[in-house]
Structures are given as C-alpha cells and as structure tokens.
Image 1 (cartoon, helix red, strand yellow):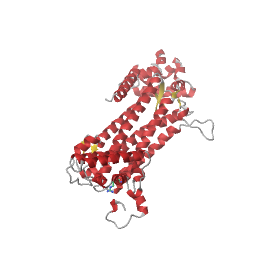
Image 2 (cartoon, helix red, strand yellow; image 1 turned 90 degrees about the vertical axis):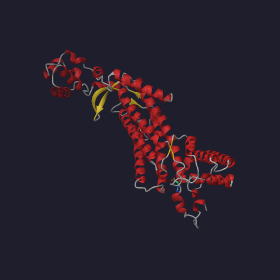
Image 3 (cartoon, helix red, strand yellow; image 1 turned 180 degrees about the vertical axis):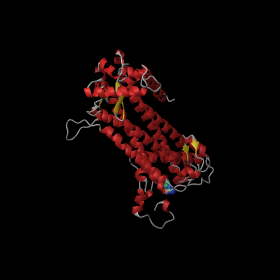
Image 4 (cartoon, protein in one colour; image 1 turned 30 degrees about the horizontal axis):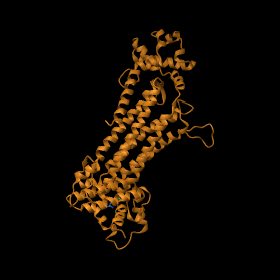
Length: 461
Ligand code: ARG
C-alpha cells in the first residue's frame, strides 16, 4: 500500500486507481518536477532543514531518475497516482529512507502548481519562436512577390486592388498581437508558487526567493491559497492559442480557396499537398484543412478548462488534475500547426499571371472611377450611382472597363475624359497612400518595420 493511503485499511479499488491516476499523462512533467525538487532540497539544505550530505544523495538520486526516464527504463505505476509520487517513491527505493526527506515543507499541491508553471513557461517560449518563424515566412513570401497586385475582397467578392504583400502583412499583424498575448501571459505565469504547501503555507523557515532565483522565476506568489488553486495562466495560454488558431484558420481558408481551380492563385508544393485515392487529378490542401479543423479542438480545450474551474471552492480540488491533458494537447497542437504551416507557406508559389487576369476583371476599379468623378466636382453619392450604372452596362455587354469607349463613358457623365484610361490597378493602389494603406511606399514601410521586429527578436532585444 502506498504512503498516500496511510490512514486506510484497504487498497483502492482497481477502477478507482485507474480513474484517479494522472500518471498516464502527467509523466510529461518529469523534467520540471525533478528541477523543482532539486531546487527545493538545495533550499532546505541552505536553511539547515536537512543536511548538506543528505541533499547531495537526494540530488544525485533525482538526476539518476531523470536519466532512467529519458532512457525509457523507468516504470511508471498507476497505483502511485502521479508523476510526483512515482518519482519520490523511486527515490526512496534508490537511496533509502533519506529520500523521504525530499517532501519536507512541501505538498503536491504547490508542487504540481510549480511543475505546470515551469512547463508553461517553456511552452510559451517555444510558441514565441514558432510564431516568429511563421512571421518570417510571411515576410519572405511578401518580399518575393512584392510587385504582385491582387483583388482585395469583401464578402468574398472582388472589391479593390491591393498588393499581395499588403494582404500577407495583415496576417503578420495578427500574429504580432498573438505574440503580445503570449508575452503578456508569460508575466502571470512567471510566478513561483512553492512554499504555499497544501494551502496555508509551511511551518519551516524556507527561502522562497532563493527558490524563485534557482528556478528562474521573477516573482513569488502572494497568497498560498490562491497559488495552489490558480490555473489562470493555463486558461490564458489556451485563450491566446485559440485566438492564434483562429488567425491561422483564416489564412488556411484563404490557402484552400486560392489553391482551388476556381481561384488558381497559388500552387502548393507537393510535399505539402495530398492526393486522392480515387480521383487522380486531385491535389488537396489537407494541411490547410487540418489547420482549420484543429482550431475547433483548441477552442474545445479552452471551454473545457474554463468549465472545469468554474465555481471550484478554494483551494486545491482534484478536479484540477483535468487541466493537464487539454493544456498539453493545446501546446502540442499549436506548435505542430505553426511548424507545418510555416513549411507550407515557405514552399508554396504565387501564380502572378492568373492573379493579374483577375485584377482586370471584376470591376475592382469602380471605386476609383467614382473618386475620379468626385475630383471633377460630382458629389460622391451621384458618382457612386453613375458608376453603378456604368458597371451594369459593361457587365451586360461583357466588357472590361478598359474596353468601353470614351463616347460610351460620356453617355453616363460628361465629366469623363481621355484621362479615364489612366485609372488602373497601379494608380488605384498608389492613390491609397495613407498610413496602413496599400500604396507602394506604405507597404515598403510596413515590410521594413516587420523585418526590424524579426531582427530584434533574433538578437534577443
Ligand atoms: N495529480 C495531481 C494533479 O494533477 C497532483 C496534486 C495532487 N494533490 C492532491 N492533494 N491529491 O492535480
């Protein structure tokens, strides 16, 4: 019988062992658990709570256990509940009774809070690196295709010409906000909970600041009851991940559309596309579809966590063990999605010619024609009306705007003149010279700013 069942006279029912054990998933916290334990015993020795030589034996034991786990030699036991008890029990088995001193001045409640925070900090830093790599892929694609003009859409209807680079940099901005959110979440994750004990603090003269320094935390928690029952940082990571996946799903959807025969704006590299088992002509954008699909899964994890935490009384409750699988899955899903998506963006190519054809169609210069009349003195509302009639006339005749004769133009308004033919996609774009607009100078500036952000990140600023 394990020591967590000390007061009982019988073993837990087998179904209960299985039901309550977290080891099938929390074994993943072993590195963080061991790091936390090593810092903890070192602190206990410094404070004279255990002997220096005992500490060395415990530390060596913990290191050896870490190696056993790495090498797949460690046998995790469900009857020992979780990663914390599994490691502690192996320690005692390995080094004898002195191993039992490790858990002095500590509870699994503050221990698991610490482990999860260490895991989360690592997850955030990995996420930030992947987000920067994704941003870099967007910048490269934008730069290589810097001169490509495409139809911008609203309601998925051709609206006005924009630079493809401008469109891609919109996603750079979304990811920039994601990065801000993860950085912000890091501030609240970076709080060291050890010393909170089960809920009320511990009776030993421990040094929490030392623990924080050893483990790389910039703050220590203020309230022991909050510290053992706070999972806000997990909620925040999952919320930031949900938003990020939402952004990725939007680009995924565009990639699906653009790679369709109907749009034909891009070609996916074969390494990032799949075939059909029945239709030989198919080149399917499965990666993008799965990005879209996995977004739902990440949202689900967030809602599950919020629901699990709802109305939990202070302090620790076993419900909270349910935080882990969703969190691990969210981190894994987001990281792998960013990795694969970055590869797909890096290898796809733009069919500039096809895009160019679409720019000519769809009457995307209609707004510019209305602006043309406004500049000649026509009130905007009238201009809008005149151009609407003109577009419907052109559509009926099956003509592009550039194919309409000046005489025909003048039927709609005498203000139309020879210079109407100098209204082009290029002039339309150049005219939108406001901060954040699609004019060449603006897009150039945005690209330069984006590259600077990436450079600064790389140099660790
Ligand atoms: N496996 C537990 C969890 O993940 C660790 C904390 C257990 N604490 C307790 N009092 N049973 O939440």
